[in-house]
Length: 311
Ligand code: R5P
Image (cartoon, rainbow, N blue to C red; front, side, top):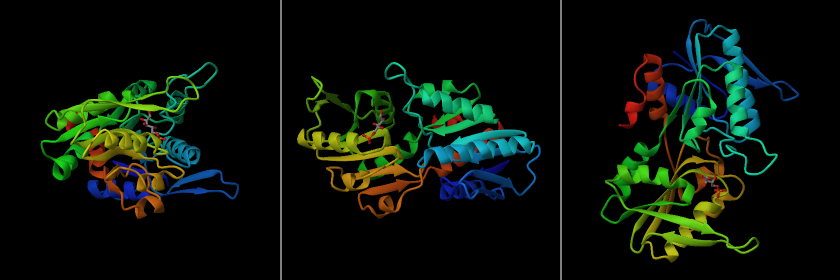
């Protein structure tokens, strides 16, 4: 087994190789003067089972091209099997046509990865489970929930826990976490805009008064969804609101929005390389998923069960 990495999240790739006690494959993934990506693998990979770790986070298109070109280089170097390990799968939110004459970019990206020569994909908390079906190659979707649940039990465990989905679309994810937290009760933040141009009204489904609320979502991007939901929960009488989010996209002013929000704490994973602002924030904590990904890689390489990781 060999682990190779693009430049999107080298600390995570190194942590995964640390878990697996195997060195990172010697390769350079660099730019020509005109910014074209160039990949050179400095060791033999002929007949090897190779895992390429690359999140397609910001700069999304550059990181995607790095992944595709790494896969192409490995295929031409006769690697036996190539697995695209994508701790964060960018373009995932474009998974359906929101209107006429719009693309389904998540499917296009899946096609690109497959056409480049990937034999398998390993992803974490895909925005929608059905994105697995966009790939016609085996695709494992790992869940951060067990890692999050252990952290929640240790820090916030007690009788007053309530799991909250920040929107109606996230209920399945929230229910799965609640199940892991001894069937904690569930609440839902329902955003409504009665007429175009009117401001959004937040309705809370469930009684959150006096509750330690744990919001769960796959992505925090601008932070709008979470920060507004946190405020609505506090206004409805919650004792505190903490958010556990798989992918800290945190674009634009998101970090300062979180810092000035009603959130007690935002916990994200290291699926995306944190920015300086994220690292400097006292409100944001980062949990590593390197052991989870490392263990899944080990099991794929050993041809043993990955799903049993979540039993
Ligand atoms: C949406 O369906 C996702 O699950 C997130 O809720 C969304 O991407 C968060 O975006 P933002 O932080 O910009 O509100």
